[in-house]
Image (cartoon, rainbow, N blue to C red; front, side):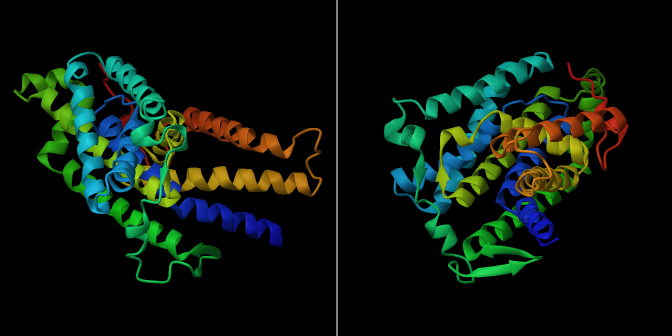
Length: 332
């Protein structure tokens, strides 16, 4: 029983920690782009990469203050969104999807390349750039704290608190925008952009604004991840993270303000609980070592989550809080 409670505690910490915040911000950005505007952005992790490295390079390499690095990361995300949107948003939805996923992988390879090593430190990445942020914590960062049965260092708790404040502010922003005339036009574009265009609205500009806003939220997620790990390594920003963010969005419910947040918490909880629980079953001999080894657990948990998502899409495609009508977009 004690081992099971420990597994739940570890999973709960994962569902509340900086990784859940990272996926929540990525998913909120995707929700603006896909859930509300109908844009297929498969390269959200590229914005996160620019956000994380914006801070890391500014502080570690250029000696700039931490908050200047935040601005650098946000500006880089805006520039990337403009570069991606200008040639693709007038075309069919699949062109944006192709451009974004290719750009995300291209940026990762560029940042880990030999030619970029003087700036990004190549495959080893950058570190020692979050000290000024951690120093702002109003409590001792080297102490341990108990929260809901979980144990946190002072630094981990500070990153989590600030990160969830950012998530709350992002949700409030999305809530306000989607109930404004701007948000109503955006949702109309998702349903039928030809009808919106016939009413004299500039569909291209609205799509661009949605892409930029979602990219900024993704960059904030990348900053939280970089500060939480204390390092920025290109291979941390794999394209698979974009699809995990989509999984969180689908799980919680697209076009719902809290859908991506709840989805991220549940997804990280399930992933960590599956990992810890399977290892516990192997250690206690309930699952024979010949059937499943401890080294296979990291892959098997994604298989189990994938099966769960497939069942969710079959029986409840709108997610936990979603509306079935919201996922029937007119992506062209």
